[in-house]
Length: 191
Image (tube, rainbow, N blue to C red; front, side, top):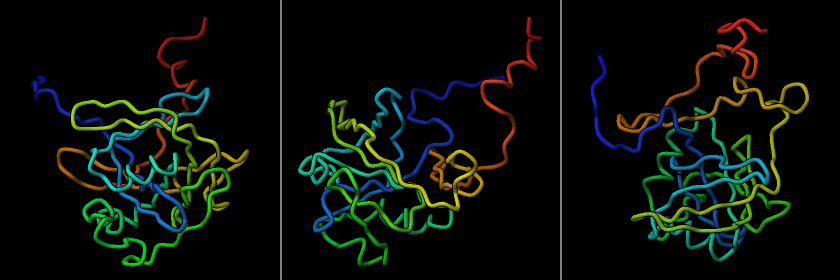
């Protein structure tokens, strides 16, 4: 039997990347769970940030941001980036994370994150207390050891950190259960 639990902001699991705004000389990052791909042509990311966030201010100034996918072992660092304001401390100096220049946008990428998206800001929409910022993905970086055949990312090798809203927990992914776009053939026999 199902129970109604109200209108909540929970979809399971949620990605938990570190989003960097600004430039190599003045950068800040924060953990963002309210983020996802919104379109494939052009490839577009949308993320929801509170207006007060320093990373939002820097992303607006540089008209760019990067989405950096941490591994599950980086959970304590990701939590730190989500809890401490970049207005009062240099989070990169405090944690030892390194930054490298992006190839197509001003915002840098995080060296220790094995998968990075360079995004050019294309639009903003205010929704309640949040600003939803849209960014076109203009380049992607991936460590070679997380790539499988055909430059596809191997989720097991990437071992991305995910967030469970509500219970406020970080998790890692489990095992593969099926191949998308063909698993349906076992539900209804092909004609």
